[in-house]
Image 1 (cartoon, rainbow, N blue to C red):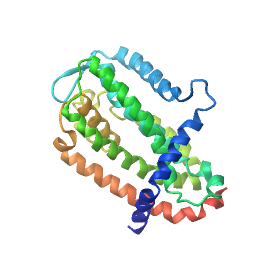
Image 2: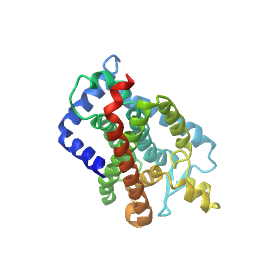
Image 3: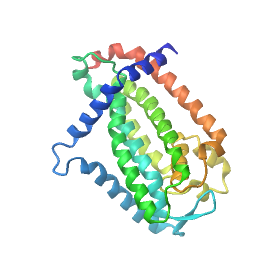
Image 4: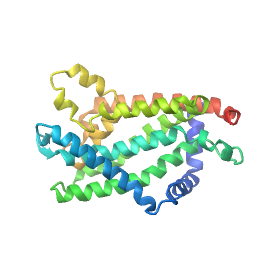
Length: 275
């Protein structure tokens, strides 16, 4: 508990530093490219078009039914989940190697190592906000207008941050000690893409197997993606109508954060030894 309180204090006290370093991180990563930061948008767009072409063409139905009974086109449904997946994937992968890839720099500087994963998450967050804005504009022209349910975004973005930071604390610590962890995580996340409701509607495809659906819902990303879609398409207040799922999600976040904080604080004094 002491470790988690310490980590939270470090984030609050160094919030200004996190924001400045995250902007620098985003700019420096793309400075050698002719198109610069535009690649942060171009890459996801290309991926979305590929998945739309592949999964959209093999589906028997051209539309997907939402929880309120309304049908939406596959590309609109795909956009609603894929923008969150890109944010989650990049933040988790980059966050997992955020400490060991900067050990030489950190050995010469005096600020808490726990803020480094947050720097990476924030750098991806700016791109996510822009992608979210583009998605909202596209859906507007497709007939899905801004609605009161958009207020859920404040909640689900905060929930996404909590999940990402908790995972990054754990994985950045383990990756510093055992470098193979990063490779294992990369492979696991690629598999997770197909086990989440991103490319195919799990509840619709597995409607006859409620047990399997329940198992797949243990994935916290399922909760966040469905929450995003409920806001974008104005179906319901997802975190209220699915209050049991909300309790499970935050229970899992608390466990992950407590474990990640304990692990990070325990081993960070020895990080320099792994140079």
